[in-house]
Length: 276
Ligand code: BTN
Image 1 (cartoon, helix red, strand yellow):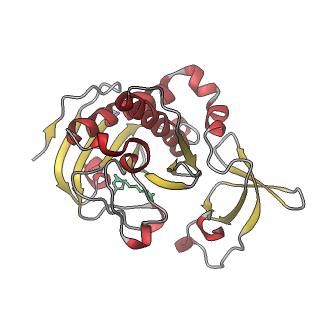
Image 2 (cartoon, helix red, strand yellow):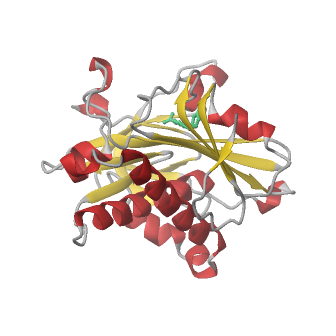
């Protein structure tokens, strides 16, 4: 059974809700003929997917899992750096959401980790992942799946150092009441920010500058493992250590090694945790 949620979607398309699904990515593909901007939200995913073939698990009812389907009839029409810019939109929406609940201008740090995560910095400046984004495509559609840790307070031991939720870091106990309404408010804010990111011509022209202002570890020493994802490579590729400079016009990451040589990569993984 699929319900239609009565929340505002600036893309002018329905927002569907299902309690349990395998993955909202699968459900979105079944909706591929619907209006561009159609959203499917679920409370529980039995086979949630992450990047590079990993699984994605979330506690039922505490978080936000959804996929938005966008129709681009030709591949040339795909917006550049779509996943990164979705991350930017989600980061801005989390700031709007936190400010709305705290009723004060929000001064915390919500940053985009290249290429597909949103990180929250705690008061000691330590970053942990609160959002994962997975982008898939077929001939005519892009499916952007977004998982946001909203109110989860406990993570499995292997994730405790790496993962966090908005409730834990930004808002604390103020999230517990009316959690469903609050999660849908956050969804509305994400859709609003994503729509502006993709349809506002000014936003289109300066996304790199705005993204770099929110780029996790920018200007700092990082360890980068060049892609493509492991399952596509036959040879292990050596990691690069250097300074994260920023992103290029297609969203590729730029890193200066210790000799000052600049390297750009379209895929790979920033391995910030390995340095601890
Ligand atoms: C990652 O960090 O590896 C990406 C995680 C993406 C998770 C979201 S939750 C909604 C959508 N449905 C899925 O199965 N995955 C994405």
